Image (cartoon, rainbow, N blue to C red; front, side, top):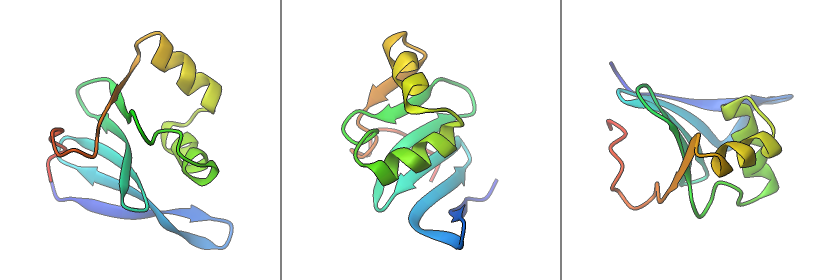
Amino acid sequence: MSIRVEQFEGKNGPVKNQFRITAPKGTVFQSYGTIIAFRPYDGKVILDENYWDYSTTTGKYRNIFLREDKATTEKKIKDGRYILANLNDDSIDFGF
């Protein structure tokens, strides 16, 4: 499988600095240069513990990536369905 990078689409076309990256081990949401979320093909969604709720813009596209609102994301973090980890320290193998 090759790596594919796509910009999120807005009302007026591609949105700057908001990317969905499809990799061999899952799909990544990157906002600017920061990885916000990782949806592995064989496990639980992982959100970056420091940046998952960084800004309004990040939140908007995180919600689109996860297909849910912030309250649902917070509930899934609380009940353990989502994992918080540092996705930007090079310890997670995304497959790229």
